Length: 256
Image (cartoon, rainbow, N blue to C red; front, side, top):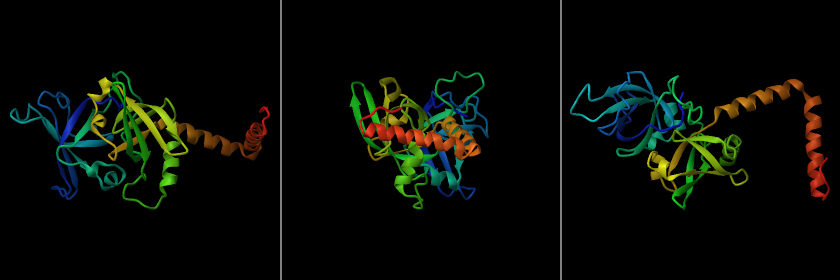
């Protein structure tokens, strides 16, 4: 579990698609002054651009004083399919956050590190000293063409609400605008945040990992189960009332 409050910006040292295990591994280098790994242990969870991954190797000043702090993680094929981690290259900046502790202040929101989709940055505009980013969902799996882009947008956008939370590359941000019809949403980065997260370095055409607020998913499933259990007797009057209101508004009347 994470909070979406980025602790450090790391740099990709290597993305190895054929490591010693026969899989893909990612090595992240940290600034010499970083303390992110001081109490880290093998097997710890560290979120990289919002993806929860397991540290398989750790190098700190304690293990090798002359080297920069760094750590390595393995990336499963499914993770490569569902995120943009496979597009990282040496020198790419990434957001890092260690798993939350029980005594941590919950300044962001509940972030699992389980990516729901990949979105493209379609516009970046300056607003005073702030930056506004607009995002459009891509398919939930960048390599999949089985689902139409329109349906993928609808699937993701229903969980994104005005003033709600969304995690972008692992950064907990507040949604400032949503357009369900055209399929996009916006967030704003204040000047302070711009210096703390890798998103501020991205431009139109770049992609981000998206994780919606899991509480919205629980609420949706709970309500769907309730309505299903109640059956037509409960749902039908609600729908009829909604239709009556829409018709009344269209005819210039007042909804009941």
